[in-house]
Length: 186
Image 1 (cartoon, rainbow, N blue to C red):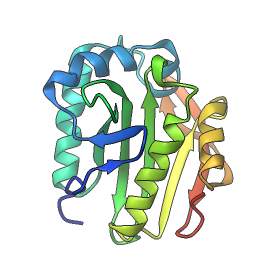
Image 2 (image 1 turned 60 degrees about the vertical axis):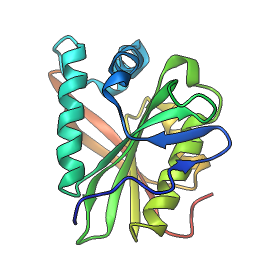
Image 3 (image 1 turned 90 degrees about the vertical axis):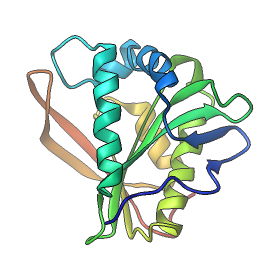
């Protein structure tokens, strides 16, 4: 797949907007990802999480975007686009199979308000309509019940448990697999 371009017009609804990350966002991204809940589910390394990791990851994500492998967004308040609520991405984009995975995280102040559901719906709709995806996947840890509820609210079907699926904090972690096909988004 060719370079993934940021959507024009941007992905937005009444509450959230998805926009490219900016260097000025790094402190907010680091603060949000440093939250114990984000670290519990998203930080696979045993190494201490630092702002350097955030900077490096942004560079990797930009290379992946240019290679057509993924696209990463800052999730911001629609009324205050400098106020970062979290992050979202389409990753593992595979043009030959017309599929991708969706991921997201939210800062503590953005949780419990339906933001993640809005974000996943925006990304899924865009992926199906503009990228012509035939399948979208969402994975999470078996103990991440909030992400499982988001998947189900958006119409994803739980397809199974991938045992010992990922290296995680010096061991292995199981992964719950969800799938969404065009026409199933709710």
